Image (spheres, rainbow, N blue to C red):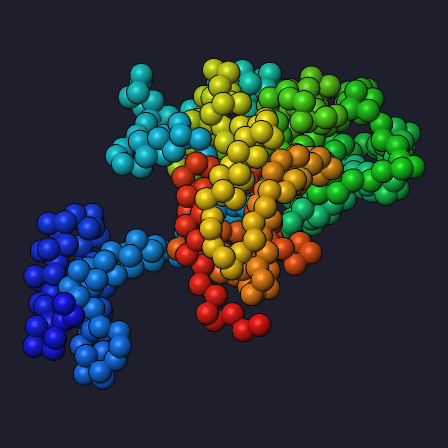
Length: 459
Ligand SMILES: *Cc1c(COP(=O)(O)O)cnc(C)c1O
């Protein structure tokens, strides 16, 4: 029975009923109360206006529950159907369970973040993960900062300020979000010496540029593009031998450092390989192929890492305890040989296409909305985040068209879901790449497509 004006329920009574039915969690009580209050006001206005939209008490509670389930945080979960595993706009690497557990542990009480439990004295946050990094990279030691941009900046500041740094013209790159190598070198107080050309740089180019004011040779990974064709670069061994001969440092910003040797890497070396080829310092990201939190890792010789750790900038660029917790949880999986299974990014990169095919098939078979046409489609996913720019990961997705609406409109409706579903449009069809989609998200995609309402589509 629809509620009548004189029967409009009291908020307290509705709340008690919702509580009895466990429609909300205790922590949500204030929010649920606000939602009920607004709905009752709307119900009152509707009755007075004689509107068609009148509710029973049961419907009122159901509406409140639905609204309560829609997140009102600014930061929201999204479903990544873009086929880009490390999507910088979608937060790069999703964390594994162990990393998430450690964040929970590190934030729900006090920790030994900078407290040495054995001696009862002040400890050092960096020591928490030094062992892991030494064992995994093979470097003498390592230190961690806020992100890889910070790692490059503090490394150059500590080791090269006031002196010259030699970089090939083919590596003076810009990496999204205005991180430009020439600008970073300037900011560090070092002097950039460009050598070679965009496509070809020879070992002699480097050798001729070395003088008594040279601090280092810097190599930068061309993360987000590829120069191919008529090209030349000295090998890592040639560069590091040259530097040793002249007693200067070699630094390699590998960008998306991978710790796991895998087929998908193609010719990309792992961090261990790069260090073995003789570089004194290697910097890489925590949230690219490593699959951990935002962080910048600096691995290298004891002497140079000590110098970096004593630089004033380190304090300003230091890693926070949440990221440190997540990093330990991530590195733990590598150390015990479970990264491929337990680090989501690694799992996706190694996944057999049969798996994304199954997920795509589930969506196609469970959606029966007469306004939509769905079919299975081949997709080419990417690592993203400037990692492996040329590599495509074959897999499967869902191809969606609508006889009543444009693909752009369908894409928009998907984005407007309580948990936004982010796909792309190709040849007037929406493509949902299923590589980065997990079990429970499939049901959300199915629900969204089944409930899709086209009444506001004007075409
Ligand atoms: C991504 C990248 C960076 C920046 O790393 P962040 O962790 O995003 O700060 C720096 N250098 C290279 C070569 C990169 O690929």
